Image (cartoon, rainbow, N blue to C red; front, top):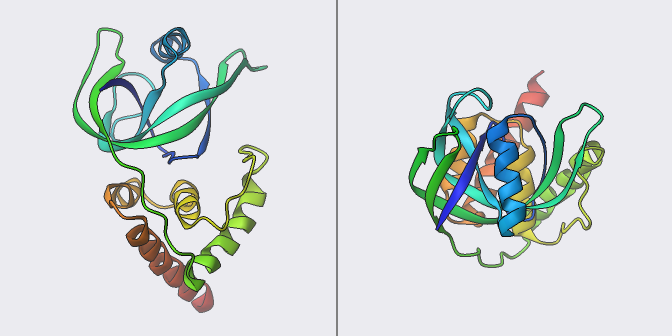
Length: 196
């Protein structure tokens, strides 16, 4: 399938909530077309370039999103809220005449349910605390802290790690592998805190 891409310096995963402020004509037109055709767009992490002023080079993985809310903010910009739906692989992409990146993508299957182990439950407890700090910007109708996949996705979005490391997580095809990787990061951060 062909979808427009919105390369960003952050990621969104399935069921994730992504607030955006739009001012570039290419993205405002993209949103108008999404409403007109009842479709969404794809969000990819930026590999090279910037979010504004010209097409950026995206990493070849991302998530489709649908627009669930919009308004004009007090700053005069178009504010939208997008919700993550399905992960995808990018096969080809190119910028059109307006600078909007269009891509041929392959949707990936939904992950299997994962058992909530004690290690994953500890991550869920940490996530619950983190979400309290971000809820002024991102509000989830329900915190699915008993769902290991949901916990995995929210950590991937919120953890302050580098773009290349987020891409490493995104290209893993197993959420169990992703969670194990996140646990290893947590241990390193805990060791660092004890030393300082």
